[in-house]
Length: 318
Image 1 (tube, rainbow, N blue to C red):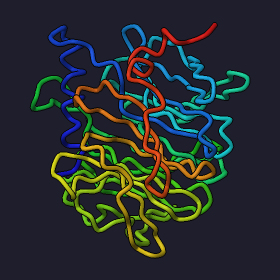
Image 2 (image 1 turned 180 degrees about the horizontal axis):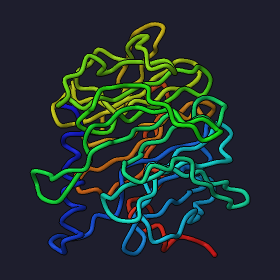
Image 3 (image 1 turned 120 degrees about the vertical axis):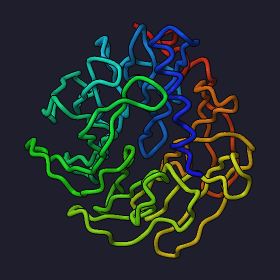
């Protein structure tokens, strides 16, 4: 079973929070890292909504990147680490658009402008300012109560602001695209409920399938670097225990990097540091800590405790 279906628990918890029926889960399980592993960007609750934060690993300093009172998620670095793209919605589960923010001068601009869709999971294409993202076209009632978005497809928005549709899948959930930092190829993460032939596939910038990043039906949350190395999570060794794996597009092989017997999420390759960073959620409640492991499978350790990601505003410096 793919992890995104199980991660619906977090979505349900978030909905219950809005209704005042459950404790507030504080962390949205999504992050990105610069190639040298010096900085990590992530989204977390701040007040009654979510904001984007940046953690400098060498010093432990946390900086609040956004403070808008809106719901922001899915932050992703540009190749040079100077810009962050993210999704913003005025209300929980409402329509959302993509924004880019300059981390040096704080300037921000909106890059998608359709007020009737949900734009999510932006990813910069190589060293360009073009961005691949997921867009949902339909908002409808959810079987667990409330509303959610359906009919997801991949889009590409250029630096000039023109959005172009790449797929026609009408997926049940977000496709979670990830792009390499050199080759212009897209890894997609199709939910198991879709049973799509594109599950585990690699697409070009025209939306055509060019290969597969895995044949493991339990794999999800892929990431790729410029050398064609791929990291992902899978519970193929032990059901419901998600570990981090490292594969290679050219060789078609893979190896298990972690053996934590836990619920790991969102692995990201820091190529120049020869490490994979990931989130660890042993309680499966959205309260996660940040870990890393070497590309050779050694040195797995926690580098940011759950408290920092759970309530980052406490750690922010003026």
